Image (cartoon, rainbow, N blue to C red; front, side, top):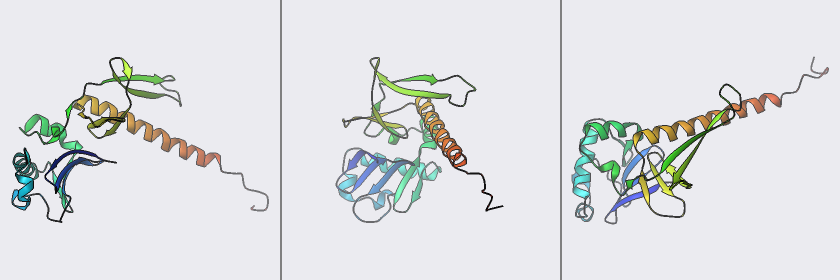
Length: 186
Protein backbone atom coordinates (compact mmCIF):
# COMPACT_ATOMS: atom_id res chain seq x y z
CA UNK A 1 0.00 0.00 0.00
CA UNK A 2 1.18 3.52 -0.73
CA UNK A 3 -0.37 6.99 -0.91
CA UNK A 4 0.05 9.04 -4.08
CA UNK A 5 0.80 12.57 -2.85
CA UNK A 6 1.74 14.42 -6.05
CA UNK A 7 2.24 13.76 -9.72
CA UNK A 8 4.39 16.02 -11.90
CA UNK A 9 3.38 15.45 -15.48
CA UNK A 10 2.90 11.89 -16.66
CA UNK A 11 6.23 10.50 -15.50
CA UNK A 12 7.22 11.68 -11.98
CA UNK A 13 5.34 10.98 -8.77
CA UNK A 14 5.77 11.38 -5.02
CA UNK A 15 4.35 8.63 -2.86
CA UNK A 16 4.28 7.83 0.86
CA UNK A 17 5.59 4.30 1.34
CA UNK A 18 6.44 2.21 4.41
CA UNK A 19 10.10 3.26 4.48
CA UNK A 20 9.67 6.93 3.65
CA UNK A 21 8.70 9.49 1.06
CA UNK A 22 9.54 8.19 -2.45
CA UNK A 23 10.15 10.27 -5.56
CA UNK A 24 10.34 8.20 -8.73
CA UNK A 25 9.84 8.15 -12.45
CA UNK A 26 6.91 6.10 -13.61
CA UNK A 27 8.34 5.94 -17.14
CA UNK A 28 12.00 5.19 -17.83
CA UNK A 29 14.75 4.39 -15.39
CA UNK A 30 16.80 7.57 -14.89
CA UNK A 31 17.15 8.58 -11.28
CA UNK A 32 15.77 11.92 -10.14
CA UNK A 33 18.67 12.93 -7.90
CA UNK A 34 19.60 15.77 -10.30
CA UNK A 35 17.12 18.10 -11.91
CA UNK A 36 18.89 17.61 -15.26
CA UNK A 37 17.48 14.07 -15.29
CA UNK A 38 13.89 15.22 -14.85
CA UNK A 39 11.72 15.07 -17.98
CA UNK A 40 10.90 18.52 -19.39
CA UNK A 41 7.13 17.96 -19.15
CA UNK A 42 7.50 17.11 -15.45
CA UNK A 43 9.72 20.10 -14.64
CA UNK A 44 7.17 22.44 -16.23
CA UNK A 45 4.46 21.29 -13.79
CA UNK A 46 3.61 23.58 -10.90
CA UNK A 47 6.00 23.01 -7.97
CA UNK A 48 8.26 20.54 -9.81
CA UNK A 49 11.28 22.83 -10.16
CA UNK A 50 11.26 23.61 -6.44
CA UNK A 51 10.85 19.90 -5.62
CA UNK A 52 13.83 18.99 -7.83
CA UNK A 53 16.02 21.57 -6.07
CA UNK A 54 14.85 20.43 -2.62
CA UNK A 55 15.71 16.82 -3.51
CA UNK A 56 19.23 17.87 -4.48
CA UNK A 57 19.62 19.73 -1.16
CA UNK A 58 18.34 16.80 0.91
CA UNK A 59 20.66 14.38 -0.90
CA UNK A 60 23.63 16.68 -0.39
CA UNK A 61 22.94 16.84 3.37
CA UNK A 62 22.38 13.08 3.68
CA UNK A 63 18.70 13.47 4.59
CA UNK A 64 17.60 11.56 1.48
CA UNK A 65 19.14 8.67 -0.43
CA UNK A 66 18.99 7.18 -3.89
CA UNK A 67 17.78 3.58 -3.85
CA UNK A 68 17.66 2.05 -7.29
CA UNK A 69 15.99 4.61 -9.55
CA UNK A 70 14.12 6.46 -6.84
CA UNK A 71 14.91 9.03 -4.17
CA UNK A 72 13.79 8.09 -0.65
CA UNK A 73 13.42 10.49 2.27
CA UNK A 74 13.26 8.26 5.38
CA UNK A 75 10.65 9.21 7.96
CA UNK A 76 13.40 9.31 10.59
CA UNK A 77 14.73 12.47 8.89
CA UNK A 78 11.44 14.37 8.83
CA UNK A 79 11.94 16.14 12.16
CA UNK A 80 15.41 17.36 11.13
CA UNK A 81 14.04 18.54 7.80
CA UNK A 82 11.19 20.38 9.52
CA UNK A 83 13.41 22.14 12.07
CA UNK A 84 16.55 22.83 10.00
CA UNK A 85 15.53 23.10 6.36
CA UNK A 86 13.28 25.56 4.54
CA UNK A 87 11.76 22.84 2.33
CA UNK A 88 8.17 21.79 1.79
CA UNK A 89 8.73 18.42 0.14
CA UNK A 90 7.30 16.51 3.12
CA UNK A 91 4.08 18.56 2.95
CA UNK A 92 3.50 18.01 -0.78
CA UNK A 93 -0.11 17.17 -1.60
CA UNK A 94 -1.24 17.15 2.04
CA UNK A 95 -3.00 19.20 4.67
CA UNK A 96 -2.15 19.40 8.38
CA UNK A 97 -3.94 16.67 10.32
CA UNK A 98 -7.20 17.80 11.97
CA UNK A 99 -7.39 14.60 14.02
CA UNK A 100 -7.02 14.13 17.74
CA UNK A 101 -5.21 11.06 19.05
CA UNK A 102 -6.98 9.37 21.94
CA UNK A 103 -4.80 7.13 24.08
CA UNK A 104 -6.42 4.65 26.42
CA UNK A 105 -5.29 1.46 28.06
CA UNK A 106 -6.39 -2.11 28.37
CA UNK A 107 -5.77 -3.76 31.75
CA UNK A 108 -3.30 -2.42 34.32
CA UNK A 109 0.37 -1.51 34.01
CA UNK A 110 2.55 -4.46 34.99
CA UNK A 111 0.08 -7.13 33.92
CA UNK A 112 0.84 -9.41 30.98
CA UNK A 113 -2.26 -8.30 29.09
CA UNK A 114 -1.58 -4.55 29.52
CA UNK A 115 -1.43 -2.51 26.34
CA UNK A 116 -2.16 0.98 25.12
CA UNK A 117 -5.07 1.54 22.76
CA UNK A 118 -4.81 4.32 20.20
CA UNK A 119 -7.69 5.86 18.29
CA UNK A 120 -7.98 8.87 16.00
CA UNK A 121 -10.92 11.22 16.59
CA UNK A 122 -12.52 14.01 14.58
CA UNK A 123 -15.12 16.12 16.35
CA UNK A 124 -15.06 13.68 19.27
CA UNK A 125 -16.00 10.72 17.07
CA UNK A 126 -13.80 7.82 15.99
CA UNK A 127 -12.32 8.14 12.52
CA UNK A 128 -10.89 5.19 10.62
CA UNK A 129 -7.63 6.01 8.92
CA UNK A 130 -5.02 4.28 6.82
CA UNK A 131 -1.57 5.32 7.99
CA UNK A 132 1.72 5.32 6.12
CA UNK A 133 4.47 6.86 8.24
CA UNK A 134 3.65 10.54 8.82
CA UNK A 135 0.68 10.40 6.44
CA UNK A 136 -2.91 9.39 7.13
CA UNK A 137 -5.83 8.97 4.76
CA UNK A 138 -9.45 8.71 5.81
CA UNK A 139 -10.83 5.33 4.86
CA UNK A 140 -12.97 5.69 1.76
CA UNK A 141 -11.72 9.21 0.92
CA UNK A 142 -8.81 10.60 -1.02
CA UNK A 143 -7.73 13.34 1.38
CA UNK A 144 -4.25 12.84 2.80
CA UNK A 145 -3.12 14.55 5.98
CA UNK A 146 0.31 15.05 7.54
CA UNK A 147 0.76 14.15 11.22
CA UNK A 148 2.92 16.38 13.39
CA UNK A 149 6.03 14.91 15.00
CA UNK A 150 4.47 14.24 18.40
CA UNK A 151 1.40 12.49 16.99
CA UNK A 152 3.57 10.46 14.60
CA UNK A 153 5.80 9.38 17.50
CA UNK A 154 2.84 8.29 19.62
CA UNK A 155 1.15 6.44 16.77
CA UNK A 156 4.42 4.73 15.79
CA UNK A 157 5.00 3.72 19.42
CA UNK A 158 1.52 2.20 19.53
CA UNK A 159 2.22 0.18 16.37
CA UNK A 160 5.57 -1.07 17.69
CA UNK A 161 3.94 -2.12 20.98
CA UNK A 162 1.27 -4.03 19.08
CA UNK A 163 3.90 -5.78 16.94
CA UNK A 164 5.97 -6.63 20.03
CA UNK A 165 2.90 -8.03 21.80
CA UNK A 166 2.00 -10.17 18.77
CA UNK A 167 5.58 -11.51 18.56
CA UNK A 168 5.51 -12.30 22.30
CA UNK A 169 2.19 -14.12 21.88
CA UNK A 170 3.57 -16.15 18.95
CA UNK A 171 6.60 -17.18 21.02
CA UNK A 172 4.35 -18.12 23.94
CA UNK A 173 2.04 -20.12 21.64
CA UNK A 174 5.08 -21.93 20.28
CA UNK A 175 6.08 -22.97 23.80
CA UNK A 176 2.54 -24.00 24.68
CA UNK A 177 2.52 -26.46 21.75
CA UNK A 178 5.55 -28.31 23.11
CA UNK A 179 4.71 -31.76 24.41
CA UNK A 180 6.67 -33.61 27.08
CA UNK A 181 8.85 -36.39 25.66
CA UNK A 182 7.26 -39.81 25.51
CA UNK A 183 8.83 -42.84 27.13
CA UNK A 184 9.78 -44.06 23.61
CA UNK A 185 11.97 -40.97 23.12
CA UNK A 186 13.82 -41.57 26.39
